Amino acid sequence: MVHYVKRETRNRFGQELEINWERTSELEKEEKYVNFNRWCDREGIIRQNIRYPVAFGTKGELIGLAATSEIGFSQAFLYVPSHLMINESRIRADPRIGHIIDKHPSLFADKANSEHLVLVFYLLVEFGKGRDSFWFPYFEVVALPESLSLWDERDLDELHDPILKQESLDEMEDMINEFDEFLLVAQANSDCLNVAAFTFENYVRA
Image (cartoon, rainbow, N blue to C red; front, top):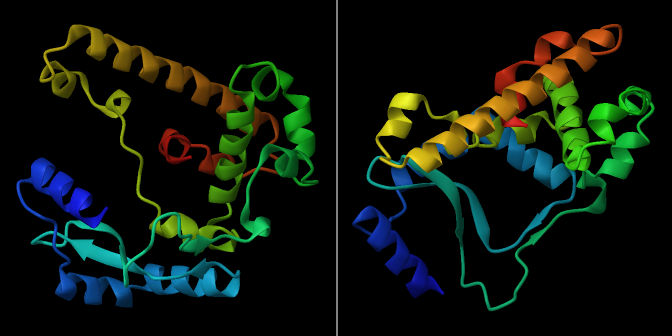
């Protein structure tokens, strides 16, 4: 498996991605990574044979995790306690926001992806709590998502694929319409939600 990963990184980046130990040492001292690892320890996340954060590349531009010893086939190396699992049923049962979800079935029940939208709504609510959110240490280290739908038209033109470009533009339009629905829900419940947190940027993060 190690040889496969090395071969793939060599093919994609033109070289093997070696660990940048200087940058890794700097990252390990950054507050957000210190807080995240403390949070993992406090909440009982068991991380065997792995190190995080680790910087890769000559400039340390890629941040991820690395094995500290060989991990065997089918060997588990990360254990997440059940109380850290976010799912629809738990969110709907939350007395702080469950009643809001129930009031808006057109968004949170009637759509094919309503289960996903419930999770997005929960994350938007938690983003609004800032440092007071239980999940804040985790939010601080999560990388922003990447998607073709977030590219502007000029970048999409560089693909020289009109079909893919149109699909990306259509997806962006769907995202904007979906976000508008979230914003309406937030505004209708401004007495118990931080409407300022319901931004398109946060929606994309979620």
